[in-house]
Image (tube, rainbow, N blue to C red):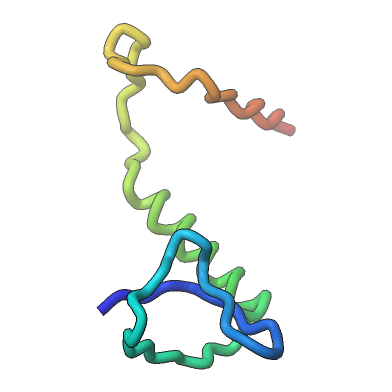
Length: 83
């Protein structure tokens, strides 16, 4: 079974352009309520917590010599000033 995200324009269900089904395919549609801002915030908070738990306070710094492939688009964040 495959789950894809589509939208309803008031007349028909609009599928992503890259997804097509053979003629005669049976498609099951679920009506899902829109995500609220509070729910989105909760998911973001959970993601940040899980990311923070992936790295300990005593993680080593890695030198550039250890990097096999660098990300050319990476821009380091400015460090916050301590007050």
